[in-house]
Length: 531
Image 1 (cartoon, rainbow, N blue to C red):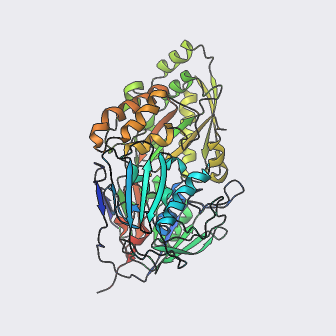
Image 2: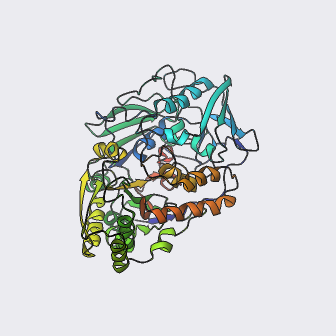
Image 3: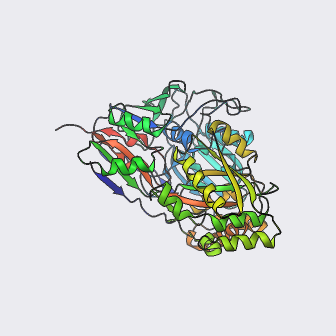
């Protein structure tokens, strides 16, 4: 068994003025092979979320991993690195110096999986649909700076932004801008169920949430810049990571990714003579707490600051995550331009005495009763242990009477979006590798969290950073934004994770299967050929 460590390129710079499609690279064996991938993610249609596979209504890493393999976007993230490359477009560029107008020219011969032609009008329809539906569980906030989009010809699309945004090409590379068939998807509602009509490298042949399986087959009509290294991918959804590991060892699956427990990573990495490899990569996944700032308890700043003074991140990553994660003191992770340890600079090491002083000064009686809520089935079983430790840390201080409850994701996500929890845990996998994507989704108007917290200075800083194509020039503003978050504590960053994939030795392309934004690039997986 080999443990391989792959360090992805550091996140620097932004999109160059013009983008041209890259040619296919890399050789792959077994292009007609089937690769079976295990995951503990769950994708289910519910009364609150009846359209889990509609790009206008889903905004989480589980569904986005499906979307990125089945839908095309004008641009996409590269095999490695951070600057978007052309995909459904053959070229894109800003056409003004202000970064407020963006034009793309489509490739010739684009076709949806049902045989319908893909035109500029479909792109306009797809973008307008996301914004007009404004689904509470969808990604419309990513496109909120768009004033209008038009198609001056069959192969041209022009985006007019409300304010300059140098990060807009990155947003077009996310499933928020997935191109759907205007003849199939309703303009005034979501497409319920599990069907997908896209133009990406794969077609969903079947999706059975009851059996916990999905089958993706190569899309023979695909026209784009990706080289597909297999003919078929089976996704198997497991109840827990232990069952997933057993399936890998038994040869029932070939690859396992989300979510592997720290114990599994350590065990699989250390075994000798095994036919399973573990690949470790740098990652930008973060985990954080969200405070309901309208809550009678969590809404009090002194309570939030006292919690920030007590939480011991080092203990979390050591005892719960076995160093498969690192302590995080900002919403912007380490490795991105402008990262600042703002929470450490403000609160330092855990200090119960300082926390007590904060509560006494605010005339808050102790112990403070506070309830934590977390998702029991979305980020892995270890989440329960994480919150057990958090509760223990707070209660050991004598200042809090804390409890925690786990809730299934299908209930948790819509309830959290309505701000019905007092303090709750969330994870974030970046939509694109830029500091703005770790600030705007949480603190801008119409934010992803649905949070009521607002800071007028932040609301000015965030759009100002977008005007600077040279991201180095935005550092001062980005650092100030992180400091404001630490001062107000509407959220509390906890840790930054590394990325891991375990796979059987005959699977190729594993080291390319996750990019810098944790996108599962199924097209990279193949089978080793003999001889």
